[in-house]
Length: 145
Image (cartoon, rainbow, N blue to C red; front, side, top):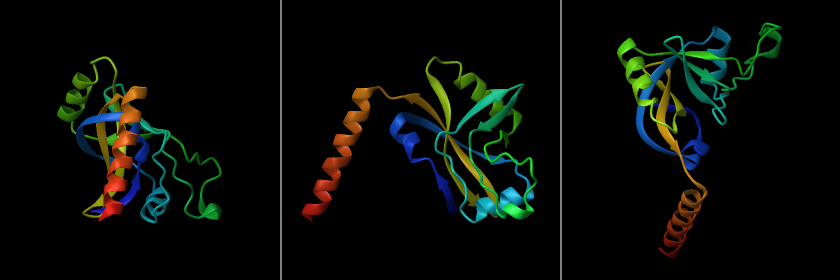
């Protein structure tokens, strides 16, 4: 499993409970760009529209600017590929107040590009401070040894 992109901010801003894996519908020139590591998940999120799951604000810059169509939008909405049962489960889990569907990482699985989505509840300011303190303590403990 080769990691293509990671949304580090997601684990800091959200308390992730469950993680699911979904395929992503891309065009050929987008696949080339993603496989070379040109994929940005920061600031992206997933929504459900008309029974389908869509990835919003994920940026894929053109692989070759000269060979990319003129009307190409790097931050366009992209459909995520899930089974109907998985989509229904997502809809049920997102009914709770404060829950969000956040992309965590993009990776290659058997030559296919997959997105890991996490159910997240937004952390409060105090929780974020606690995470920072914990990270700093771990860093200090690592330096001592």
